[in-house]
Length: 307
Ligand SMILES: NC(=O)c1ccc[n+]([C@@H]2O[C@H](COP(=O)([O-])OP(=O)(O)OC[C@H]3O[C@@H](n4cnc5c(N)ncnc54)[C@H](OP(=O)(O)O)[C@@H]3O)[C@@H](O)[C@H]2O)c1
Image 1 (tube, rainbow, N blue to C red):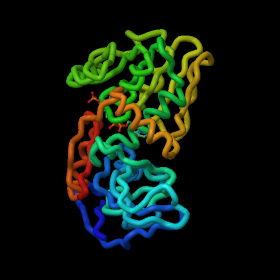
Image 2: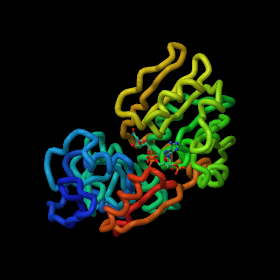
Image 3: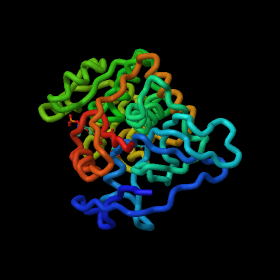
Image 4: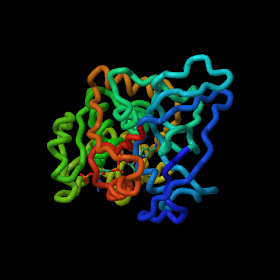
C-alpha cells in the first residue's frame, strides 16, 4: 500500500512515500478503504513534536476518515464488506492519511447516504469533540449564555450551531473576516478579538467553550457568572486550574464510540448543524494542508480526497 507520511524530522518541506503493509482486520475490527480523511490541529502538533514522541517511523498521521469496509474480522456482527462508514481513530491510534485502516468496528458508524465521504470525514472528530464538549461536559441548557472562543474553527463552528440548537444565546470570538460566516451559523454576538478584549465586553456567562488556548484561557474565567463552567480543548489533556473558586474548569473527555457519531448524523440530518466549509487537498499535498492548519486561521475543515 502507498501511504503518505511526513519525514521523520517533522520537516514540512519533504513528503516521502513509503511502502507499509496492508492492514489486516483483527478480531472485532474491520478494514476500511479510506475515501476521505480530515486534517485536525492535532496532526501538525504530533508532526512537530508537541505531543509525546513518536515511537517508530514511517509514522502515518490522521485521526478521522470516511470510507468503505473492505474486510471484516472475527466477532464483527454489525458491519459487512461494502458498508460505507465514517469514524475517528481510537485514542492512541492514528493512521487515517492512508488508503486503508484497520479499526475497531464498535467505534465507527454507518455513513448516511446523503452525506459524501468528504463531508463525513470533515464532521467526524470536530463533531465528536463539539458534542462531547457542549452536551456531555458543559451540559448546556436552553436560555443559558455561552461564549465560544475561536468560533470559525472546525470544532467551534460545529459548537456554535449546536449551542444555538440547544437554545442558548451564543457569543463568539473571531477575526473580522469571519463575522459574516458566524452570523450565518446563528451566532448572536461576534467579537473581533483583534479589536476588542472579550473579557472587557462580555460578562455573566453560564459557560465558556475555549478552542483557542494560550492567554485566552485565563481571561475566559473572568466572563463567567458564579457557578459557571468552562471547558478547554486547546490547553492539553488536563483542565487548566480554575482562577476562581466559584466556577468550574473542565477538560472534555473525548472518547470514541458509535453513539456520538450517530448523534452528529442526527444533528446534521435535523438541519441543526451544517456540513462545514471544506477545503480539499489530494493526499500528496499533506504538507500544504499542514501549513494551512498550522497557521490557525482557517475556516471550517481541510479534507484529503484519498480516492
Ligand atoms: N479531542 C480533542 O481534545 C480535540 C479535538 C479537536 C481539536 N482539539 C483542539 O481544539 C483546538 C481547535 O481546533 P480546530 O481544528 O477546531 O481549530 P483550529 O484550526 O485550531 O483553529 C482555527 C480557528 O481558530 C481561530 N483563532 C485563532 N486564534 C484565535 C484567537 N486568538 N481568538 C479567537 N479565534 C482564534 C481562527 O479564526 P480567525 O481566522 O478568525 O482568527 C480559526 O478559525 C486545537 O487546539 C485542537 O488541537 C482538541
